[in-house]
Image 1 (cartoon, rainbow, N blue to C red):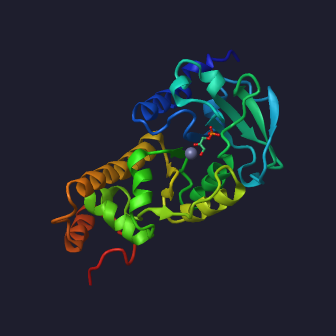
Image 2: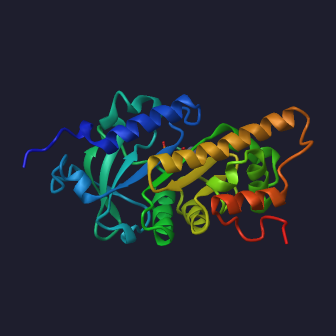
Image 3: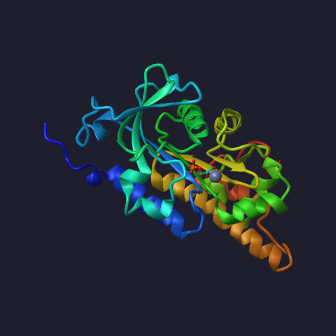
Length: 275
Ligand code: 13P
Ligand code: ZN
């Protein structure tokens, strides 16, 4: 069967548009940030012969729970600003090998590029999220500026951090009623940070990496992008509020409860002081 040019694939176009958007927002300076997007085989086959493996890429952890799964990923050390113009140098389509220890490269990552160094956190988070929501397909990491700044000035207590974000914009509670997970500062790119992130992903779609950035999970690009941009907007408002001299009035817990009822969401248990 004749294949359609890969650059026409909707998922390649989505990656190009999203990385450009993220760069424009200033959350992915230099090579900052990475995305992995789980693809169904039937989405890939119109464009690629999946029997043709360009090369094998070893991995430093066991991803056997994802064996046979296809992903489009950003490359390590690659600049989001360059993805639109040079997709095959900056993106790759890979399939996890049966033993979970390597990847089959099917397209992209030209000139011996490798997938993002954050693959352990991405893949472990995919595994964790899929157990909660089998429809989850995207893990996104970036250096969202105001969330990053807040990790220096706000107490790194998940309940307190979540409550501050919820109270900065009325929409926040509706968008992430489960709150935000926070891990300690850790060395990026390691299995350890992958384990810590995925542990938090069992109960959150947002995980803050203090003094580094944010992780988000979602079913599609809009969900994950919308999730991060809502939390980031709240962090931006928090920055302005602090700069303007601090909070004089805010949304009460009773009103957050009313909001949750109206929108049919369940705030994380114990996060609102209502009885
Ligand atoms: P990569 O270039 O390997 O994706 O790393 C960027 C990054 O943000 C590390 O946390
Ligand atoms: Zn990073």
